[in-house]
Length: 230
Ligand code: HEC
Ligand code: HEC
Image (cartoon, rainbow, N blue to C red; front, top):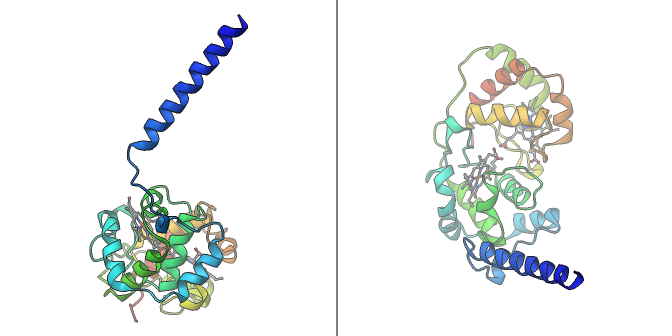
């Protein structure tokens, strides 16, 4: 009885390890040592990458894998709420990529494409340099309802950080919102209010607590219409 139990346990173990070997082998590219992410300390990695002498030509090549979702001109997919990346601040792009790699920003769709065995650590900075250098294509704005209400909210509660013209602040890792698609802005603001994005600025999350969905619609529409100045 005892020996047959042990035999059963051994059979199960070998079946499990055979399965693990099989499922592990299938879709993964062999990870070269240079392609291992150093995300144990994301803040240190962000600080290093912001100072790294990035190469936009290498970045263009590394960006190839991103085009399916973010498009060749980095204009994103407005109808799906995929962000425009062209012209965003280098620091913001680096922080958001590292946050996703490190699991600090929830992005289940994108995560598999930006992991350490797909994009090398320095390529994060190269891609950011490339994207920042691109011209900003026209964005998709909201429907133009409640713009006065949106302006009031933005001027009172958002402009101090995101800037009067939505230009953001590269030094403080604050995203440019001017030129961004309405639907992306709406979803990110909603997710930030509901603590869904994880890496949203804490002060901003607090400000957003009393916001209704109509308020978020109004302020997002207003942001999507801010003039793009570089
Ligand atoms: C499967 C689709 C998909 C792929 C492939 C993808 N992304 Fe994304 N990306 C998204 C989505 C969707 C978001 C918006 C966040 C969310 O909803 O999760 C996003 C957000 C971002 C952001 C944050 C932008 C901001 O303003 O905060 C950056 C930066 C980014 N992606 C860069 C990249 C890069 C670089 C690659 C390639 C290495 C890539 N993405 C590949 C779907 C994708
Ligand atoms: C205290 C400064 C601060 C204030 C005030 C603030 N934000 Fe933000 N916001 C940030 C920072 C910082 C980020 C980037 C979060 C991160 O670190 O990932 C951000 C991100 C965002 C994003 C996502 C942009 C992107 O490209 O992913 C949106 C949308 C946004 N804020 C909207 C708003 C709105 C609407 C208001 C006003 C109600 C507001 N913010 C007020 C600091 C602020």
